[in-house]
Image (cartoon, rainbow, N blue to C red; front, side, top):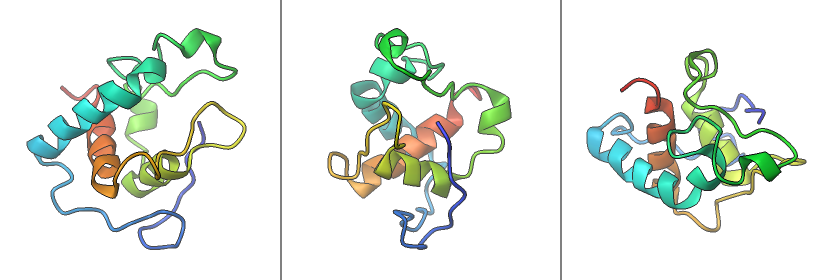
Length: 115
């Protein structure tokens, strides 16, 4: 999945990053949303090995890979979660998840592999 570099408030789904993005409760809420909606493709651990991963046309992102994670921008990830990725199995979640839930998922995903 390709993550565009976008800044908050640029009109591409980049709502302003919440101040509590790295708060433990935000990360925990994000883990809950991730397990309910994302793990089927990205895996429970976020390693890209979900139950549906093998049947997809492209491999889901391995969020535990430090090469990806350390360069990931929260706003770009929020945009990808909100709008999906054209030509892949990554759907847009803006109509299914609230803005807060999408930011919670961002916090959880960027915390994967750091525990």
